[in-house]
Amino acid sequence: MTLTVRIAADADAGAVVALVDSAYRGEESRQGWTTEADLLGGQRTDVEMVRDLVRDPAGVVLLAEDGPPSAGLVACCHLERRARTARLGMFAVRPGRQGGGVGRWMLGAATDHATEVWGAERVEITVLAQRTELIAWYERCGFTLTGERHPFPYGDPRYGLPHRDDLELLAMARPVGSNIAPG
Image (cartoon, rainbow, N blue to C red; front, side, top):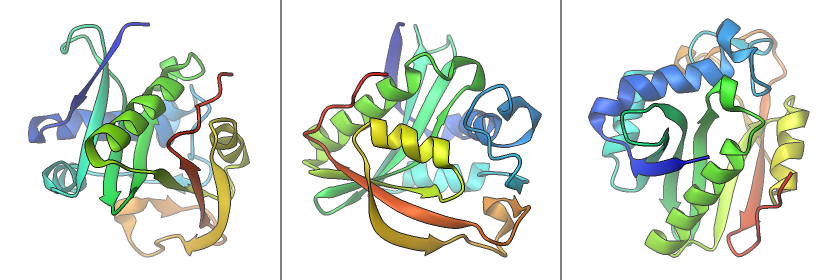
């Protein structure tokens, strides 16, 4: 696997939206294991939201590409700096590349960025409570549930159209010094 990581620019917003939506929504997402298509319809993000993240000085959108920069976007994530903590979001891997180590590689690249550039000591995420397989994956990567629960943003179609009324987000965290376990 020859991946490179770079910081996204405004011009990347459309490709990021396509990647994120392909990993979580619609029929293409069903090719991978991260699909939320049974829980949510509609979009996961949009170009305006991604551009806002790219332009925010408190954060960064990282892109993983296969080989040279024009070879293809395979993963992405957003990091937001919060004091000594980095908040990880919009984490996505192209469905056809899931299960081959790209996610762990991207998580490692994001953690390295948070540590080396911001001096972060901890990475935090939120995961839909109904996504038990995704929670288990993050646990294998060293994250633990913090006990915090957050309501899903019902009524805001920018985050999707819920198929059920019991969605909530669970907070997870891991210290940056801990290794991301293989497998």
